[in-house]
Length: 137
Image 1 (cartoon, one colour):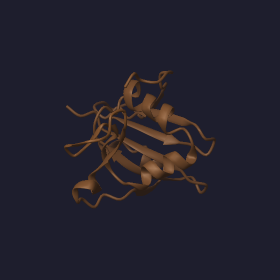
Image 2 (image 1 turned 180 degrees about the vertical axis):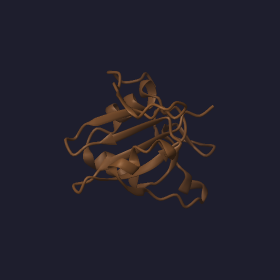
Image 3 (image 1 turned 90 degrees about the horizontal axis):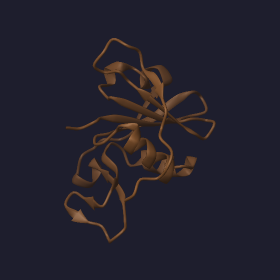
């Protein structure tokens, strides 16, 4: 079962450009991948520029294995879908009706913030910690 997430980058006007991420969106995986491998504004912007994705860190792209030790985003556009990034206000980005379980935002302070969207409860989105350390991949 998927743990859906939304990954965004906060822009100077406080809007957020974001994409959907389908698999393993919980902080212990996606949060750590983002902190370890997408830790500059340029890397985050490039990741989001590709549009919605199955995974941001995959060793195969729709059945085609990458070279040993290589990982890349598995974008839906690679299989012909048109799923560009979405521009929202910060409030719309953190709206529970987006149907994601977690949301990650690269802030104007150049750091990742993570939120549990509490999709299955009446609670408002709440800030959560991203564990330290890279994953062994």
